[in-house]
Image (cartoon, rainbow, N blue to C red; front, side, top):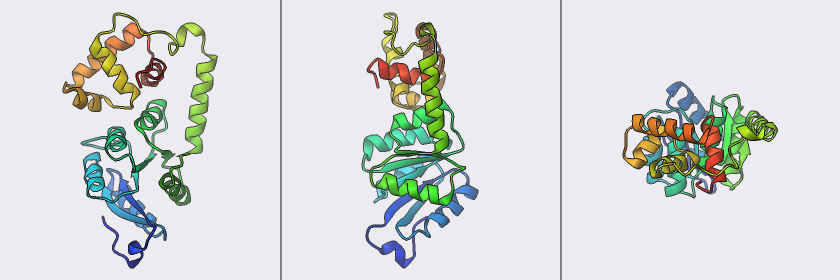
Length: 230
């Protein structure tokens, strides 16, 4: 969905791609953002593949990214953009504010994270901030991260695995999987990266978690970072 108004020709306008698999969300959002004098919506994408194609066609400054999308999900798309187009900022806009989603997106390189409770002004503010190289987190997301940090700090030492060395019996493949989890990849993204099936990825993750006593994916991200793998 490309801008067609004379305003979109103006200098200094942020070129934005809106990505959401639901047309009922994507199209009104693109229309509303396009009303801002300093924002030009250059494409509306239904999945990560369309996002990558739009960015490749460029120029694009900011991608407003949903997380749960078909073909390529938002976290994997964010990771690829960070690697291949580091000049493009990603602002996540999603209904999900769980640890796995937040840490996965931020670990993949997202510059902002908003929930869909955010209003139009919040979204445009986050887009402008991302375009200027700044980070913006929704209050709900900030609270979640603080709560996670406090819970980690208060947890008894035996259940806090972040500072523990990785066991010697981890296989090279299990270390690879932990590294990619720490980089924010989804199971599908790990499968594509390693050229294996998602079922095989799940098996490696189950073995990895059992050997390291990692509790969940958010804990795995922290463990990977602490071990210098991500």
